[in-house]
Image (cartoon, rainbow, N blue to C red; front, side, top):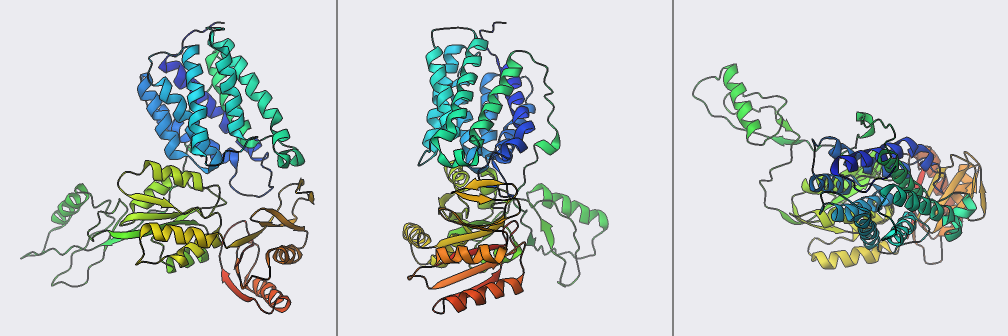
Length: 505
């Protein structure tokens, strides 16, 4: 079989096939993650990213190449979750930026598109690390470039490029020692190879089910903000039910949102409020600065809110919010500049992407990698300071925060020369694994011992799933007894997966 051109119809099938193949392999890809933590992993993030774009593509009716390219690019950019998902979306962005200029794609155009895809993805990451999805993408692009002028057959071209991507993927453990010790290849790189393999299946005419099931493309959104709207209706006579319905219809038409109930009382008596879930039409003047933060757990959510956060996005380690989730949350904050606190290293790229896309507000991403860093950033905020001074102050303060997190292992593995058994408790610090033990209390105390230094003054403990207040207080007392000069604070976090989140400052 020889194919010399790809039109919009075939490209759409290839993209959907690639998405379906990635979705089918997502749990296997999740298992490749180095840390055996029961959280939202690479396979899940990449799948939700590509399914956001696949949904946009599936809704198109006989699109041309330009329309198709826009759907793939925009859908993946807005749906991007986690570092691997953001990088995948940037690869699609670069790829489609080239393809969208042509009615049909040839080998030469594919060579240009692969090069642009890799350049775009590398630029999106401040400190690119080799041995990752970026390395696999670059290997594919380099092979594509070497094929230019050697063949006009896209099938031959694709086979060579995919073979090279697989070869580079197999070498990733030699580039990152942590992969080699865990005995896995890079999960993001494996996800990219799955996309390429799926696209190839459609290219050669293999039978593929292109139907997208609703469950596959479901993307969690921030909880919708319900707010109170009160209307005063003056009338000389009681209003009939049909008149109430007319008022309701007119209010919904002008953008108030869906109204669940409407009641009008006489003589200005207290009337039930109307609940609306549409984007607020702000009536108050916008304040200069506001905050959006990401966290899971009622306790942590309350802490951030009490410290002045305007909007909370539910999520974090267990579910990385998408770029669109962050944009939607920012839209609900009535401020000219909105600081975003990712509170997770795997959300920072999505937040940066939201900042680049947002048009009507300025988004400033404070690169908080942990919950304690996010709390410290909020405490460091000064309402009377400028945006620039606040950004500098928050970034400076979060650098002084040490974070530890205790959770359980979901499989046997080896990390940092420490043997981990399924269901062991792990104490993880900013730079890696600090402790491993079958006893959660031992793992916790060993982690703290490595975090505390002579400069430490405060230890804050946030207990969540797998612990309770009594256990947290017992550990706090043990810390106080061993380190009498430290101030120990204990709060309910309510976070999933992590029994304890600890900060040492």
